[in-house]
Amino acid sequence: MSSWIDLPAGTGFGLANLPLGVFSPDRPGDAYMCSEQRGRRTGVAIGDHVIDLAGLTGDQVHATGSLNAFLARGPEAWAELRRRLTGWLVDPAHRAAVEPHLRPRDAVTMHLPVEVGDYVDFYSSQHHAENLGRMFRPGQPALTPNWKHLPIGYHGRSGTVRVSGTPVRRPLGQQKDAAFGPSRRLDIEAEVGFVVGVPSALGEPVPVAGFAEHVFGVCLVNDWSARDIQAWEYVPLGPFLGKSFLTSVSPWVVPLAALEHARIAPPPRDTPVLPYLGDEGERWGLDLTLEVRLNGELLSSPPAGLLYWTAAQQLAHMTVNGASLRTGDLFASGTVSGPDRDQRGSLIELSWNGAEPIKLADGSTRTFLEDGDVVTITASAPGPDGERISFGEVTGRVEPAS
Image 1 (cartoon, rainbow, N blue to C red):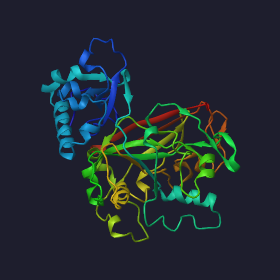
Image 2 (cartoon, rainbow, N blue to C red; image 1 turned 90 degrees about the horizontal axis):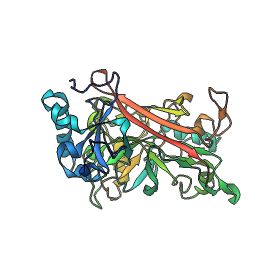
Image 3 (cartoon, one colour; image 1 turned 180 degrees about the vertical axis):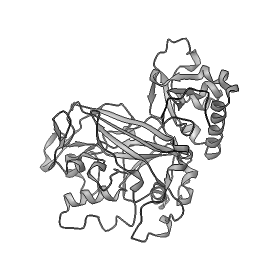
Image 4 (tube, rainbow, N blue to C red; image 1 turned 30 degrees about the vertical axis):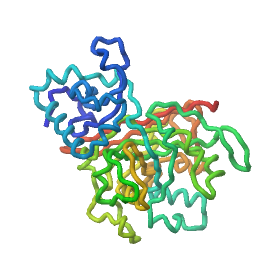
């Protein structure tokens, strides 16, 4: 299919994608912006443009400043909107109706796409888990005994989930032997996030096969981590202040419906799982390639297709005890890493806990982040007919501690 919109060559925001986000115009005085259009609204990325859904459809669910109300309508509504958008963008007969609601993407401000209910972060990359195990438990098995039996995770702080571009204030906290001060080991975690649309009832687990009935789509996540604070505090209850100061997400949420060509089987598993985690035939591995850049320089390309635990298994485990889902809940894969050095999704791995400094093109080195550093994570996935599906980017600049 082709669109009457002039789509740039190689755009990752073509007809096969149609991600949703929340935007506001940068120039409120522009003539195109009438009074009822002021404020945050739902948009769809297409090429270099954003479609104002509230203006185009007249449906006020798209003028709420959040995707939550629309996502709660469920898969039939998601599919219907996608069908209508495709028709509007393919058939030139709709051009006159659609064009007044197109905004240049570089002339809008993007906002947090959902009101986040709960935030859960998993630990689903075997390569990442083994790397950390070798660093911190030398001479012992790299994986903990439970790792291949269940998706390990922790509850994060939903109130500090922020949209891409939010400054990263270096956190203060306790470190080894109760020393206090700014983190000196500020790190990144390149992750894939999943946004819940349809809630579930308390006491009713969501099976692996129910994944697509509840999850709308996928975004990118950078779970900023203060490794020195984390190392001092995490025994015996796990991550807390070393993680909760900021989690950044990309502004565009790519629908699961756009990722049919990216679905793959997860890597082979050598340990049987309990029935509620069985996913034979489900194929909810996702062939995403992430790219991590520091100050514009490519550091690594983590492959999400190698994640041991899929998002469908993560959701099943997260609810097997009867915990309920809410619209806007966000859960993330945990750091994505591959077997090669240039596939590691965190600085603690890339620098091997500081023992192997990363050499940058300008001659400087890094073990962990310095003030002024800018980290950008992007990703793409295969689409139909050789297209690529873009997830946009999640970026953040490190600022000094307050």
